[in-house]
Length: 162
Image 1 (tube, rainbow, N blue to C red):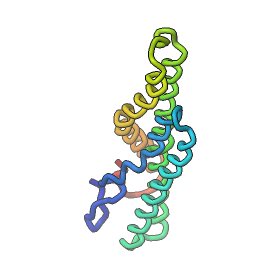
Image 2: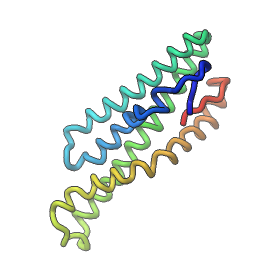
Image 3: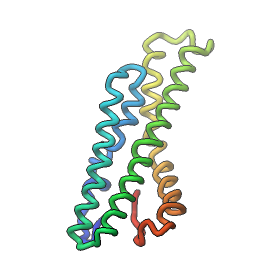
Image 4: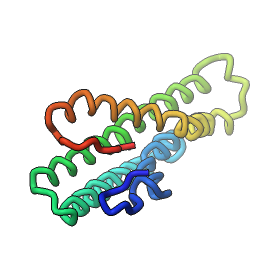
């Protein structure tokens, strides 16, 4: 669990609210069936990112952190969440659903499938893929930030961003 100095539960990372950050992956999975909701799914996901960053900034201020440390904490959370919760998983699910859509609609071996299966297969494969990609992406983003931004004296503290 991720906690602050007062050992309370992190609402944005340790509760089911964490799943709100994956709204855009659901939007990408449903893109071929309901494309008009894709933008809304990204608005929800970026809203989650902003709320988590704002919460961490608020906690840092309440814990008496300096302005510089507070800015570093907020920036770290904003960067991590943007890549780990929105950009990389959104693109990954988009590619998975698009490849599935192409496969079931363009490859001859799938031409015998009923229309309903060909229509919903990209969504089903995209949704099933979401839990499989989350942990590897979180780990990748954490490790990448640990070896780059965080090494460049971005922040002195080891932050648990998973």
